[in-house]
Amino acid sequence: MRASLLLLAVSVSVLAACAGTASSRNPMGFFVTSANPGQGANFGGLAGADAHCQKLASAAGAGSKNWRAYLSTSGAGSVNARDRIGRGPWTNAKGVVVATGVDDLHGPNNRLNKQTALTEKGEMISGRGDAVNLHDILTGSTPEGRASSAAGDTTCSNWTSGGAGSALVGHHDRMGLSEEPPAKSWNSSHGSRGCGLDALRTTGGGGLLYCFAAN
Image (cartoon, rainbow, N blue to C red; front, side):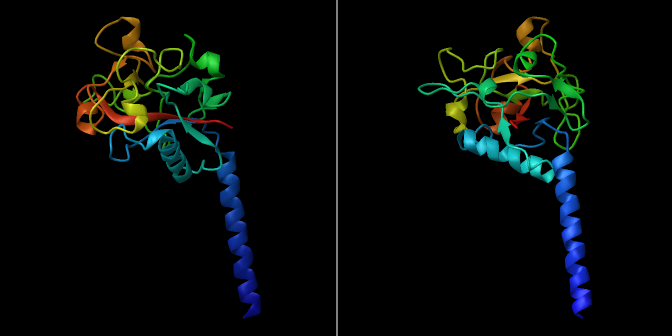
């Protein structure tokens, strides 16, 4: 009996170690959330948005990393999204490098597009031209990844509103209604029509976020 229990304990330890090793070796450092928690742009602030990224990453085997939502906040003590996400480089779930660092991510040559902006599950998100368009990704940011100084709400009350308000969004597929630069911006294309899920859907969104591993 003791021998059997000892063997069982050893087996469990080995399996746990293998699982931990697999998680630590997961190269993913970037993903687009596969789903919204259900309250539109209300994530309970930055901490809640980060927790959402962490939860999805953990389910995908990359929970050992420190995940941050790519979101800026406005007003007193504003926060820049670009300052929250670490130094890079960042790879998607398929191991493709989408940016080598913060400057590259916000430069003209980053590799972020519909084919590379995958979910934590390695799945492609529908965009403009598909039956359901989900290309609006919440950021609250300028093209440089900083808090906006524009008048009005640009962050859905700093990610605590799931009703009234507005937030800046980017297009993960780099496509829009025109060929003008904002329509092709991955992080700062236009403002949303509201902060609830129904309002976000009207311009082609689902309350999704960009998540980056900060370590």
